[in-house]
Amino acid sequence: MERFSVTTPIYYVNDVPHIGHLYSTLIADVLARYWRQKLGNDQVWFSTGTDENSQKTVEAAQKKGLDPQRYTDQLAGIWQQTFERLGISFNDFIRTTEFRHKEAVQALLVDMDDSGDIYQGHYEGWYCVGHEAFMKESELVDGKCPEHNRNAEWLKEENYFFKLSKYEKDLLHWFEKNPDWVVPPSRYNEVKQFVKQGLEDISITRQSQRWGIPLPKDTSHVIYVWIDALINYLTTVGYPDQRYRQWWPSVHVIGKDITKFHCIIWPAMLMSVGIEPPKQVLVNGFFTVNGQKISKSLGNAIEPLALSKKYGSDAVRYFLLREIPFGSDGDFSEDKLKQRYVSDLANGLGNLVSRVTNMLEQFAHGQFVRSTTNSPQQLSRHQSAIEQYRFDEALGIMWEHLDAANQLIDVKAPWNMAKEGKRDELNSLLNDLANRVLNIAGLLEPFMPVTAKRIQKAFVEPVKKAEPLFPR
Ligand code: MSP
Image (cartoon, rainbow, N blue to C red; front, side, top):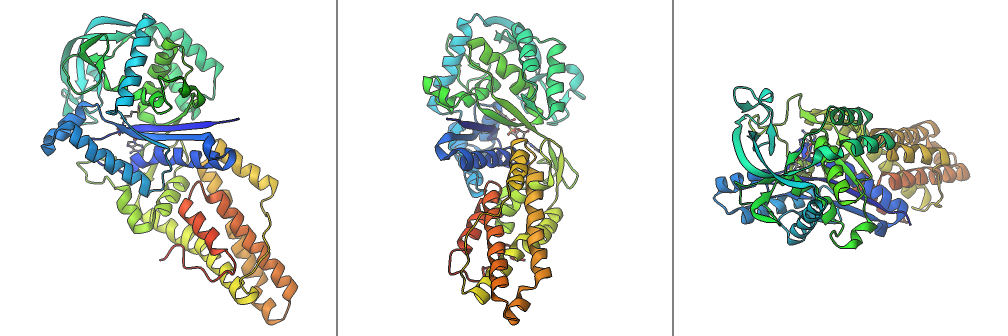
């Protein structure tokens, strides 16, 4: 029986979620919901969660005067609640401070060590806590990381290293064999190019830090937060217990800033222990707000919860999925959201539902005969758009059908049929319209789950004029 397992990046808890963070999670949610419809609920696993063993966590906790664990408990709660309110249907919310995760991380590192891939060495270099990564001197501006606008620190440590360079050939071979492994192709080429230039071994522990998961063979070191974080994808499916195999390999949805970790380091770690790399890595672009980079200092970090309170969670979902083609960069603005809210949602979908339910109540005692109106071509266009991650196109197709139904009402003027006593013609038109709306609602569920449910409820007989789905 076919199964589908999908993950999101796990999020740093040094702050609350902004609209950019919602995006990967939303894409994963659409896929999880779509595959549940197709394969059945039990055949799908969808995980998201929080990345808590970062130095950023410790700093943020200090600022709030809390100990790191109390602080992460609070923040993880906020992230989880935000996702729930936006209709994110995760099966598991994983936190890297959980015991099950520590077990999984330590088990995997013991296996990597058994493969002879971990050795002790010396590292020094510029480290940016914002990135949680070493940086090249050429990447700094006046000693500062330009992205995080903070001074890089010179770290000089005895560390443990992972023999990443050993996997250069295996990775290239894997890329050649799996040309669709990274989507979109531009990201695939970028990753391949990077490996072709040659890989260096990477330091995977920190001696100077206490907050994190200890390295089993030398507990005076904690494991580098990125190595720990990547392993969450195995923890969530039950690793080190063998039951992880029922879900692995998973599909990873990530942002374009973290491809090297997911498409190079992670598969190499898995190759080291003989576990298959992820099934596919889907990479989304970045978006700006009103043309500007999302940043705390600019104060433009829009919170998804606030937006969803104002417009409803489905309107936020619709906007992000329709406006930004998957894989591209995009721009968010509340004005554009408002425009789509009025034109596509209130005047398009909302209006159609209220017209059809109103006419059923007035002219047909709220009764109609159910049937399938989705043609096989329509369905296959819809499915291939989703399965090839063209979510904007899938929504575009649905809206073509909604618009066509709205036009049909204008052209056929059912109210005249009622006046002229053309009962049969009127009934068959109303049946057709009701079924078109209901069939579209079914296809819409992965994208707009609340709306889909409300439409299905509005068509329970006897049908009465529905409350506006998208009040102005
Ligand atoms: N904790 C790491 C991920 C570990 S996964 C094993 C991390 N966390 S993060 O909170 O900084 O970012 C999480 C995700 O949010 C990343 O995929 C990142 O690309 C995405 N985004 C952050 N800002 C974004 C935008 N402005 N636009 C789109 N995605 C953005 O990285």
